[in-house]
Image (cartoon, rainbow over all chains, first blue to last red; front, side, top):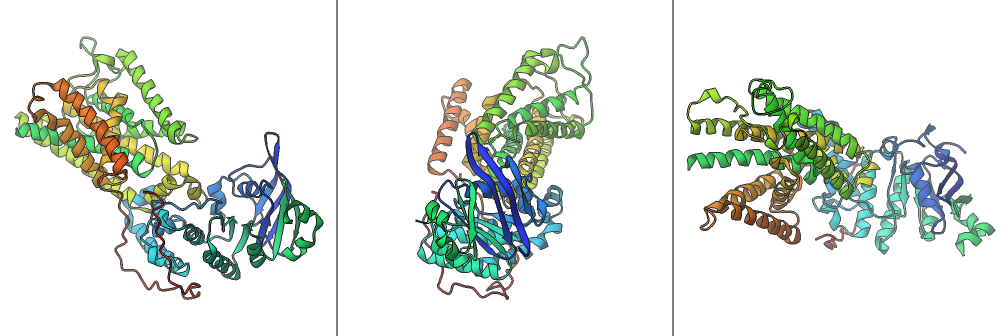
Length: 251
Length: 341
């Protein structure tokens, strides 16, 4: 393994008697687009919730860039450069697209004293970030809607906005939890193209996805989870030959 | 008549400060913090105690401590005490509570403090209240009416400061952060925002503001007791905010005018009401309720809805980022399904 950006080391978590994640171990290579597939209830989302700090594992560790982030609350995980999205689209509905974008970067003007009393200290940064937000919005084809409330977007546009918004935080890695859920045909292709293009620019992705055709197009490496544990790892072609994977999921 | 208008002016400005406090916490931040009238009460008591002088054994009222400090100091102390108590309540309530739970918990804290103050008359006067609270700068003028003008100026100044503060807060990156927490807390968290910090900030500032309103009211009316900060007082302030427009400070001003001035004071002018204060008081509450339900049903975002932000400087060239070509050459489909109406 050359350069690992994120690794999970024997992570386990049980809810009462239900073992949601059992000794899950995985390693994500920097700059790769990695897939995470498995049947419903396999523990994929739980594992992502552990990585992002929403849940704390019973045992095991998560390392990001070599630093132990297991006990970090979600906002601190985000500040290390690891941003995730949710299965349900999570725009800020009563905020415009530009406002949505400007929430993500860390800003001088979020400090209390500067926000109230020293507008001059943050206003230039505000306009720099505004220009950057507009660049991303035009790249994602949403610029004509910049002053629209995000709640009025279609399901696919919301997904695009979420990815664009995450980019505003200058992340090193994005974890996308079912980015194609509720997205119609043409926009799926657009989202796939964006992920491939961003991967080409060196951004690391971990994508949870049910649509195996999409996974095939996106990911070199794919992890398969079933019943809480990581069953197998390989390319989609390899996994299609794997007896255990076929039995658990792929039929 | 002039005296009456001046009185209404003073009430308008002090109530608006309270509504601005609610607007910061409930409107912008979306926190169901119903405890804000608690800080109205605490601010009033702080102002009274620090301006009335030490309690003497032969006076007819009872309270602890007591000092006679000159004009702005009791009000400033009210803001400080209010903010500090807001911090304490925020640390207790905000760490784990959200939504309904926060509403019930803050209501419970209000009721507990209210009952304690009511039950220990020696502490803050209890049900007898405090009276003869000195009016600030009373020596400046000789007539009643000219003093009203002085007080109107004080109240207006405080109100403008609070309004300015809210505007700055709402329109800064900090305010945007608060809005994001309101709209979708988990999404805000995964973008690196610590929601607890933002909530606590809004609570501390809002509490200080409510305390200032309380201090002004006590100084103006010169008496203070249990009634003006009972849980019922949450209602008109929240109604003013919702009617005017949540998270919009001009809306708060309009809502305050509609509820406290038009409904609260205007009823007395109607024939049949002028000699029957009890009737007009009851009708007033019915109108608050009807207006609140009507607005929540037909115009939930209020009279003047929350504004979309505008950035004044002209956008620099924003056609496309230099390093990347836009992937989509087809025009964006604008399928605007009104997802939430």
